[in-house]
Length: 184
Image 1 (cartoon, rainbow, N blue to C red):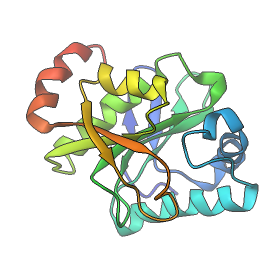
Image 2: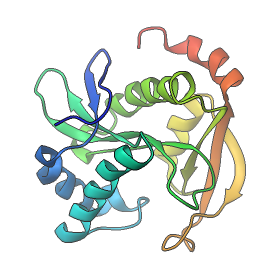
Image 3: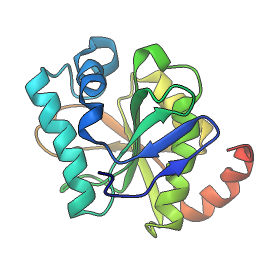
Image 4: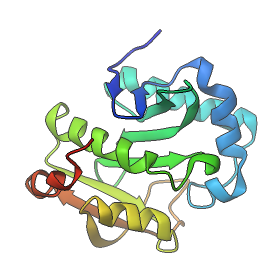
């Protein structure tokens, strides 16, 4: 059962997470390199609660991150999208892609679609991306999207000790930056 919108891009289907995503979600959460900047490796039981938390946010907030599904194979490859849990430093569009699919432009393609979604459908006035200062790949993606470093910020417990900077931009800035991505 899908409890939210479906976005379709050139190569991806973005939809709310469901139980069929769990095996790949757990694989994602168990990968040390993937999870280095996302709170650390999670055992299956914690990964399950994370998936359920994301799915539950669709019911409570009316939005959350989307599961990324490749259009050609139907494979779950990550999660991207709006995220604003209690205590978060701002309305965020975040991303995470399986290591086997990193570097192929999927996160960029999905981030463009979900930033559009956040501004056009959710009515957000600005968007942030909370990024560890050592996460060069995410910093490069944020900057490619037109976001800029707004300085250090703090995440709520249990992540309060993880160093993060807030990259972001306003809706007006995105309207100008969006022109670079006409193919999406």
